Image (tube, rainbow over all chains, first blue to last red; front, side, top):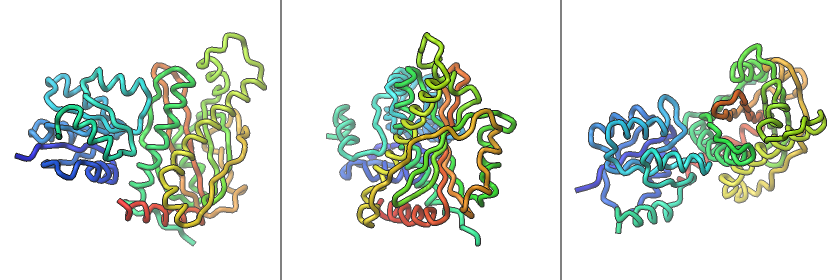
Length: 122
Length: 212
C-alpha cells in the first residue's frame, strides 16, 4: 500500500522541487495543498500520514497548521520544509509537534537521511 | 512601450527564490536583534514607473512617515535595493540592539546603514546563490553593490520614489517585510529593477523552471 503523503506549500514550484527530492523507490500517494486550510482538509481526509509543511504561507501559515493539528490530536508525521531558518523557528515547530526541520532549497540527500533516521524508508 | 507582467510560473519562481533569500536575511536580523522575526510572503510585481511610488505607499501604509536607506546594485542585473523603516527606525534599532547609552545621530545612522547593508547583502546574495548556476552558464559575471546611503527620513512612503529622477519606464518590484513579535518595529526590503533587467530576469527564471 502506498503511503499517503501531503506536500503543503503556497508555491507550486516549491512543491514540485520537494516532490522531485523524494526518494525514487518510495511508494507514495502524493496530495498537494496550497495553504494551511487545504492542508487540514487533506489531513482530515486521511491523506497525510506524512506531511511536508512550509511555514510562510498566506491564508493559514505552517505554525497555525501545527497548532490546529495539536488541538485535533496530532496524528501525522510532520516534516517542516522552510526558508525560515531562524533557530527559534525550528525550536517552535518542534514544540508544536513537528518531527524534523529541513531548510530550503531542499536537497534530496537531506530528505532521504531524515526519512531514514525515523525508519520511514530503509 | 509596455512591459508584460511575469507569467504565473515566472512569478511563482521569483517568489520562491525571494522567499529563500529573505529567510537568510531574516535569520541574520533575528541574530542581530536577538528576537524572533516574522517573515512575509514576498510580493512580486511588474509596474509602470508612475505606479511604483503608489505601490510602495500601499505596501507600507499611506500617510506613514518612513526612513529609508538605498543601495544600488549592478552587474548582470541592475537596480535599487531600498530598506524602509518607520520614521524612528534609527532609534528603534538602537533600543533593540540594547545600547544603554543614548546614541548620537551619527552612530544611529551608521547602525541603520549597517543593518540595511546586512539585509540587502543577505537577500541579494541569497538570490544570486540560487541562480548562479544559470547566470554563470550564460557568462553573466558577478553582481556587486554600492555602499548604503540614507535616502529619506520622515517622509510619507508614497513620495519615496520620484519617477522624474529615474530614466526607467518600468520596474520589477520585489517586496518582503520583517516584523518583530511584540514590537512596533517593521522593515520592508524592496528591490527595483528596470525594464532591461526584467527581460534578463525572465530569461533566468525560464531556465530555472526548465531545469526542475
